[in-house]
Length: 203
Image (cartoon, rainbow, N blue to C red; front, side, top):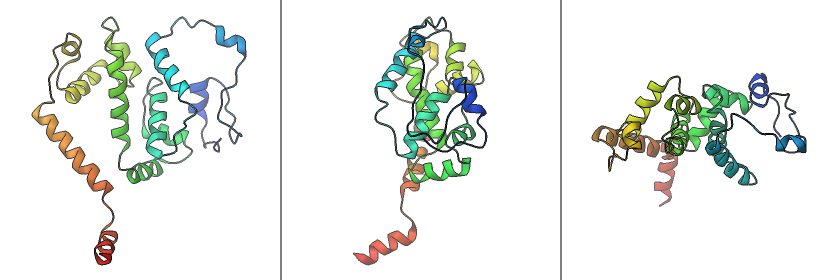
């Protein structure tokens, strides 16, 4: 429904066709016969995940952090998921995305990390799934990059996690990271100084 971005190549690449902007609704139009086509390379787990997303499509996000989260989920398995790509899809620049997310008390990196966390838990439960394929689906440049991210996020390796050797809590260092992120989020949500002064004067 929104206006077209300056560069439409991401949309063409993702959908494989031209996208009509300034429409009266957000929709995908296709022939009914196409819905019966078998997709040889289809991933059942991803299909199940997408089905749940389609069922919830009537509840479209209005908040910017939810909009960006939805785009991140869509873009992760389609190459590097960057704030520039998200901004392009939203027909704005990266500074606007950063500012809007800051108003929501979060950041692009925090949303990307949260979406990867949600997906990786689903994907690694299948012990037969190659980790290189999981890394690609999560938008990592290499399997080693995903392995480092997973260990810093969960405090153990993916192989240990799959075998059931899981820490009850994050490592001490990870707890420090979480604490720093929490303090940072609280700072972002804190009202401006002038506003706090006005509130105190009002009381």
